[in-house]
Length: 96
Image 1 (tube, rainbow, N blue to C red):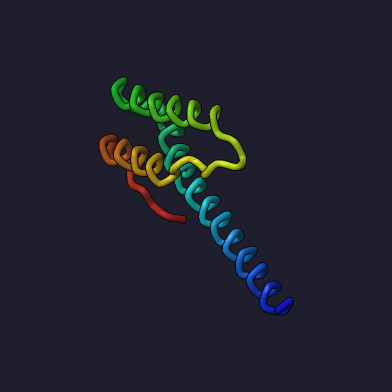
Image 2: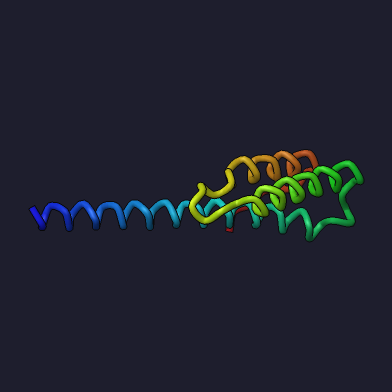
């Protein structure tokens, strides 16, 4: 029975690591696209700059309220918003 408990604990630890790695990948995806827009800031229209500022503000507000015991912000939603802005601005979303 102790062995079974140990195996379950290892599975939980493995699951937590997988979730943590997935969260890092989502954040990295968001920030890669966000950095692309910021690198081209002066080439963007005022409307696109305002959309980027809205995403930044929303993320800032969500992170300001976030507590470690809560789920992380929905990085996919933020990445998709940034993707939409990139498409609107005509930027290629190349993967490294």
